[in-house]
Length: 170
Image (cartoon, rainbow, N blue to C red; front, side):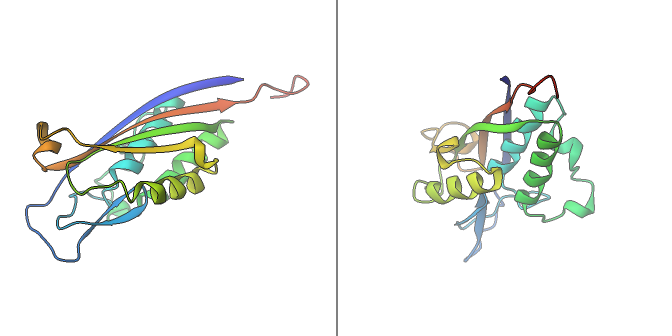
């Protein structure tokens, strides 16, 4: 079996204004919060980091090269649609997801109760068992831009696998 590992990272800042009834999209799940993330798309840092991890494992650049924020076609887009396109690139190249491990860095909102839904959503999008789509949330204990609640960051580690050829066929 052939394997490749990719790492992804993304960050978005919060808007300065509060908005009652606002929400963030993280890991494909809506999370209530009084600020929104500023982004060209829906600002889902978790899915963006995941896309970059897959693209990194493929040696295929990054999310900005494939879906530039200068392209109006991606304005406000559901990031899971971008994930589906990136996953299709991997599958077309003969790879499949072995597992993903995602870390969300945010002082607020508290995410523990949303993590199970994020795992389920991402496992479904990636067509993997739930155990192969891990999501964690942590704070930075008040340190740095996330600690000051200026934004949210996410890291992704992705393992792609390709089965060996059968009977000499690719």
